[in-house]
Image 1: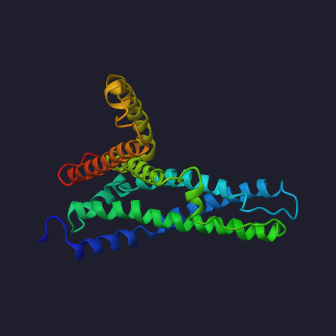
Image 2: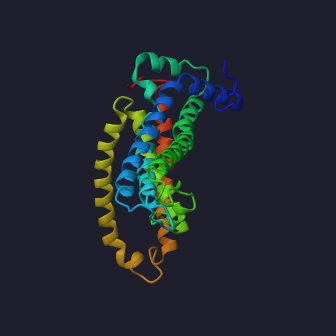
Image 3: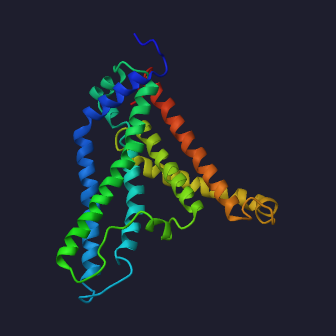
Length: 272
């Protein structure tokens, strides 16, 4: 019998360990696929870049760094959405649903364990896969094009020099936007365990159209009073960043909370 009806750290640790042990094979396959896809793109891009350079060319930085940063930004968003759509993949089958619901833990612990694995553990795995793919490119082209310098892995501080993360506000906005987008797919995985990614993409397009339409109407109504004034909410970059980050954070928290309560309903009524 469960004495702590909401959260127990020892029990939560056991749930996390159980989830990782039972799902290590598909998760390992996904890690290899992440690495493989990024490595293939970087190797192909490197071939197009390096093969057109003259032997003995020297640069202040690797000519592949801009493409590598672009790949990082695109890949982390796409793969992050895919990872989020796997949060409740085990609810697709009757056996999986019974296994999850019969596990001796609270619904909050079950949800939080899978949320952490497919949200934050994914980020760690993605960073490792990205660096491995980048180093694969470096090793291969240092062998085939030894006269071109430099051929080196992109340093982390180079991301701050790129157009995506030049300002501190840009970093915060990108992080908030990532979690906001990811939260929709967490919610989608709870609502549609089957074909979660496709269904969420379709729903997200419809929601985006509705949000944009409402946003344009609201902006027209309040533009003169709140936006176009010298001291309006969008009068400075800091004000704009604050509004965007706050909005994205609210949406992410709302979606995660809604996903938890939607998952909690399955303890009472099977809606799948």
